Structures are given as structure tokens and as C-alpha cells.
Length: 618
Image 1 (spheres, rainbow, N blue to C red):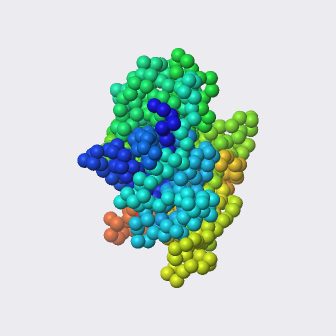
Image 2: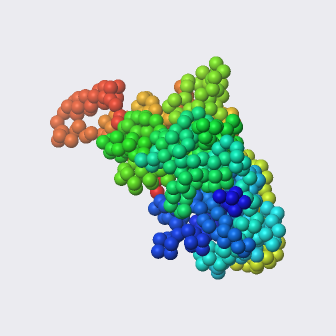
Image 3: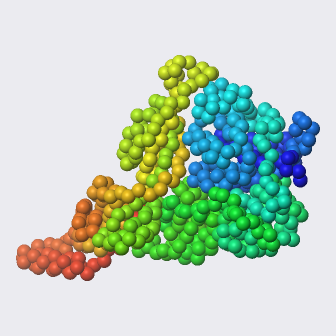
């Protein structure tokens, strides 16, 4: 295949701006998919992707397109995931391309992820083609959105394309522009083979199938291949391209996008971002950009029925074969029994994994409150990573604790600036910058940013630095409710920063319950401790003796509630008679309660844990 006739591009956009629908039109127009096989969101194979309208796992497809110059070009399209949690996969897909289509909804305009993904594409020096989608909608304002693209990214007016992905208007022109404006791949055909892994899946017969972009050289199906990060060698089970289903070929050449069936049985042996090379003539330098994925959010997963533990373990093992970013380790809880401590890329990743386990493997799960991983600097100079509060060392051995931080970008109509500032102030955030996106064209009217109908034409880009732990505490729902759903959010990991953090222990009847321990900012510890103690007081059933519930930092108790004792009426059988008989019964009851309090144990019910963890709250 002549590299000059190859174009590699991807589609980047905010969630629900029409990526997958536009890809459907490309598949139809190029004849890649037969009309009788065509269905909406063709590249989104999971039911979960179709229902939610988001791409969870990136896909690739090879199309043939006849350009106006009369030549047939091979177009390799990589459809990227649409949620911020999967930004690493998006970055690897961008690294596999020379250009990208930047899709923006004509009715919604530029959103937070539009900016984040465009800046990411610029870092990889990709040629961007701006596309305004959904121009057929009655509420669309293509002129205004085109003006925003010019202001924010500096595009010229004649560079912007307009399309309706739903009915196909303007889609063929986009493919023509891909051929003319995106450069051909620049790999060296005679150099040692190098290919970038931008995704991978597991097949029970062929092992790990790596989705690759060939950068240099060529690879035949009889060759051996090597993973450059680990040095592991493997026989190639199959080579192929996506047309759109996997189609075997004899050889993959420089510039092509395809797949390699590696034969590996563990997805960790061929990770996303890795470089594959030839086993007989290996390259000396791997392709840049490979980093080891690290989980950012942790939560406990327990089966609601303890007998399903083995089924949960088997389901997690199968899920990990297709998802290298999911980490698991066994753990046990006093109230919830045996389960697993799982690591996720973010809250959306956690939600997707939970839903897949419940739907595909018919499991009924209990998920504990998500937490983050802290870096703890010890007095002896060493540093450990703690993802579970119960594993935090003794306070006298800790020098300081560092918490993970995020760089946040929020895009919102200007009328919601005050509400967002108030929300961010309550979340220990640090303001960085704010920029107004001026309205253009359409019925934007004046520069004040509003019109009589209440539609806000001027929008604001706000940037903050905020602890990841604050993101987990219902932040996204608060952001949407305070802005009536108009704000959009994007974030990136910004490293670790030392903070005055403390471990708050919860004691029930003077006995610590490790599963309820939490790590909090010192300023919030008393307030949160009181709230937890109050919730437990309402959910722990009354005993025959008083049950003290305490929140403590080390030996210092910061909050206390008491579950009152059940008063058994021992005098009910006394219809009269001498008062000494009644006193004797009351004294006997008093002594019994005193003895019971010293030896009695309080079983904390599952409902109490769930009330603290925020699961099941309306």
C-alpha cells in the first residue's frame, strides 16, 4: 500500500456532540458497511454505549474513498472514547493519527471537553478540521458556534465545515477535506518495524489482540514480535485490518492501522501506549508517550449475597482481560463480608464497571463509598501509597500526607458564574483564571451576553485547582443542578500536594469499626464526624444497654451520640403488693444491664454502613 494514499484521522468531541453518528454516515458513504447490516452507532458495540450515548471503548475502521482527484484513498478512522475518565485512551488514539475532526454541536457550542481534546490534539501537532454538527436542528446556531471556534482556537472562517450527521448533509465534503488537508503518514518503510498500541481486547482463542498504528517498517504474519516495554516475544497468531469487522491480511505496512493477535493471555503484557517491534530485527527506541496507567478512585465491591463471592471474582477476572486500567485485590469487611478493593480511572469508569458486572454477569453488588489514594511521607524518609483509610500508619510515624489534585476546566453560561464560584469555594479549590467566550452571529445581539428570552449567549471558561477527594462528594451533581445542566466539566490529574489530613475513626460501644474509617481535611473533621455519628445513631438498632457512638482523631473524641437503651418493663407483672418487690426487680435489671454493657457486643447492621457510604440515599 502506497503511504501517500493513506490518511489516518480520529474524531474528537464533547459527549453527545455526534461523533458516532457522523462515523455511521462515513461507513455508509464509503460502502464499508452494507445497507442491510447498518444500524445506529455502528461502532459502539456494547448495549451500554448505545443506551448512554457515549463511546466507552475506542474503535477503528478502514474505509476506501474516491477523492475528487480520481484516486482511491485508504482512510483509517479511530473513534475515541467520549468521557474524561478515558483521556489516556484518547491521547493514544491521537498519537496514532496525523489529523482529527473537531466536532462541535451547533446548538450547544464549545464545551469543556472540546477545549481539552483540541489542546491535546495540538500537543501532538495534529491538523485539526473544525466541523459544526447538527445544523438541521431548529435550535442550531451554526454562525454563533463558528464564531466561537474562531475566537477560542483561531480557525479561519473558510476552514470550518458544516454538517448534519443525522441526514448526511455535508458528510462527503468532510471526507474530501480529510484527503486534502490531513497529511499522509511519514514513517520509514525500510526501518525496523515499530507499531503503537492504541487499544487492546481479549479473545479466548487468539489471546490479547492489539489495535496498532504501524509507524515504521512492515510486519508479516509469519514473523515474531516483541513488546518493547517488557522484552517479551510472541508468535503472531493473526494480522489484519478493520473493514469494519476484523479481516486477516498477510502483511501490515508503514502508515496502516490494523490489529495483531499476540497470543498473550494477560492484558498487562501488551498495554495501551506500548510499542511493538519485530522479534528478528527489533527497533532500538520505543515510540514516545507510554506511561503506566494508575487508578485514581478506589471503592470496595461486595456481593450482597456472600455465596456469590466466587462468581464476583470470576467476573472481575474476565473484565480485567479487556480493561487493563481496572485493578483488584481481595479485602474483607466486618459488616459486608468478603469482597474486593477495586481501582478505577474515575467515577464514570466505576459506574460502567458496576453496571457491566450486574448486567453481563447477573450479580447483585454493594459498592462502598469511593475514596482516593494518598501519598504518605513517613518519619524514616520513605513514602507509601494508601488507598484504604484502615491502612494508614500510626500518626506519630507520619511526617505529612499528600492528596491528589485536579486541574478543572468548567465552561458555563455567564449567568451561572456566581453559583459556580460559591460551589468551588466550598470544595477547597484554588481559582486560576477565567475567560469569556463572546457570542457571534445568529441572534446573539448585544455583547452583554443575554437576550430577553433568558438564553445566555456569552459563556465563560473557568479554571480551578481542586482536590480529587472533593470531586467524589457529589460534585458533578451539584455542578449540574446549580447551573440547570448547562455547565460542562473536564479535568486532568495535577499531581500530589501536602495537606492537613487526619484519619477519623468511628467507635461503636468503644470498639473501632475499621470499615467506617475515613481520611478528612482537619477543618472538616469535626463537622463530618458529627454527621456520621448522627446517621449511625438513627440506623443502629437499640440494645438492652446504652450504645455510645464516637468519632475520634487518635485518642481525641470529636463527636458523640448515644443509642438509648430499650426499657423492658419488668414491673408489668406486679399488680400491687409491697414496694420492696418492685425495687428488687429494678435493681436486678440495673445490675444485668451493667454486666451486659461490659460484655455485650453490638452488631452493626448493613443498613448502617450503607447510610454512611451514601448508597441508597434518595
